[in-house]
Image (cartoon, rainbow, N blue to C red; front, side, top):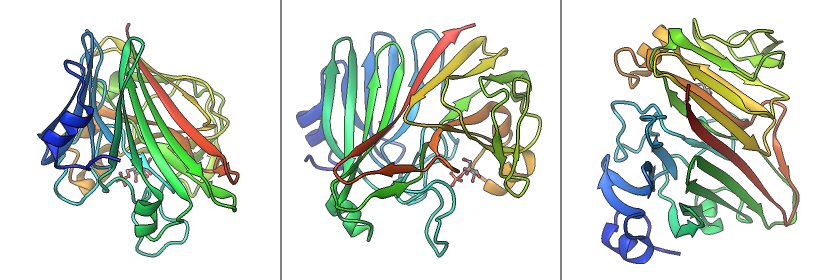
Length: 303
Ligand code: TA6
């Protein structure tokens, strides 16, 4: 296992791939930049968090807070935060952070990857790291980011203990949009969702989703691709996935954005989260000796 964040020269010496994978100091921390033909991805070692994805000819796909900094000890808003080993508030309450505890930890860089056309990066938290976080000692977690003509992010949990492991989790993808009023989300029609703003009541809609107010929904029985149609940026973003039956859609809208304080002046108008999850009734149960790979595949298409 390699040195963790901060030692940029050592990371480049050990894992750099000339012209394809390089580490640098940015946002007050350590990032890796992956390049493939005209596309690029930026991944923070803190939280194994993708911060940017620019496919060739499509512009930036991900939204990132204008206050994004890796040296504050706070979770960075934007990109693809890793929510693990719980999604949302901690099931047991107490002072535990929302969306788990791995977003603010420095992960180990395991290896750079060159597979066929693409380039990738594997990061991990070992059982020792997780034990130190006073969590179970017989579990490890990895994030594998792969870039070729699309972006793949895998969140892989390994249970090497003797007890089954139940977790909730999400790749909490913040998508950048030209204007929230000119966006539709296709692929969730007639799918039941938990309305987090209405005491968790179960609802469903027949039409493609438009965002016109604060929206916080956990769609269940949602296995297929979801497509964000952006009329202003003239593109579609297609998110497909594996080992997930729940999709979260979130936009804080005006009042919550102001309360959050790191969305920028009109940030809510330029983002929507479409999250690849195991949330709500879709918890991941991992048998002893088994692993679970939650993967999000993000593809941008000119409309
Ligand atoms: O995924 C939706 C959600 O759970 C919202 O309820 C809101 O809390 C959002 O995540 C952001 O959470 P964060 O902890 O990143 O501020």
